[in-house]
Amino acid sequence: MNRTLHLLLAGAVWLAAPAARAQDIGPALDMTLMTGWAGNAAVTYDLEKRAGMHKETAGSSSKATAARVVRLTYTSTPALRQQTVQRLVSHLQASSPSGAQAVQATLGPGKTDYDQLYREALKTTAFANNDAAAALAAYLELGYQVVHNLKASNAIVASQERGLRAQAASILQQNARLRDPAAVAQLGEEMKLQTVVLLLGWQQSQTSGQESTFRTRIAQQFRQSYGLDMAQLKLTDQGFAKR
Image 1 (cartoon, rainbow, N blue to C red):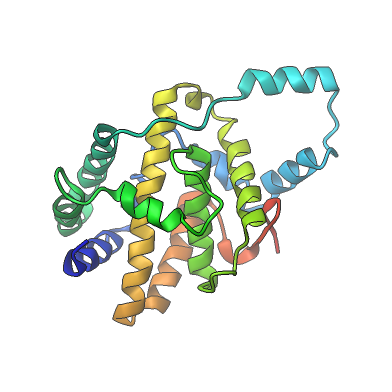
Image 2 (spheres, one colour):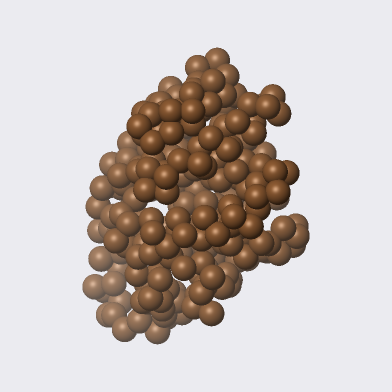
């Protein structure tokens, strides 16, 4: 990607209001399910359940699990990715016309495919592409890295990423809308695009001398959009847990 466009895209999009950026996330992502993580309720339940401490009879548990398990992997297509870009452009029009223009000029038809940038970012992770749970986990992990200023290549290990992906999957499995494969694909692609934009924004903030402001803004966004106080969380082999 041309460096000038790279910086324009990152800067313009992340200067948009946090509330507007929150609208870019697909409707299949239920914010109320994410909010429980802030008070550690969902985290505690998830850890206990996967550790075998959550008391359910084997029969009822297996039936309930079978009833709500949905496939979180999907097939990505150029058309789906362009639809995702255009949704972002539409959302940005009112709050950040320059951001909308930058996204269109950089990621629009015939331009850079954000999937290439996302796959490049995944190379050093345990996350698979075209997996909605992995895409959500990658976005949350990057937000955690930004807030905690984790830049070392070994700051987060594969076992922690697998735990975060499993935790993200357990949250998404509770959403009945994701029984529709199209909703899964939409969510996965929108999380991939959000991850790319967040990564570009973080990189741009480091070169522009605005990293401290950027990190504060991202911490605020996760609190407002998800009810997640990243500063109060730690990443473990079971995913996020309370510090």
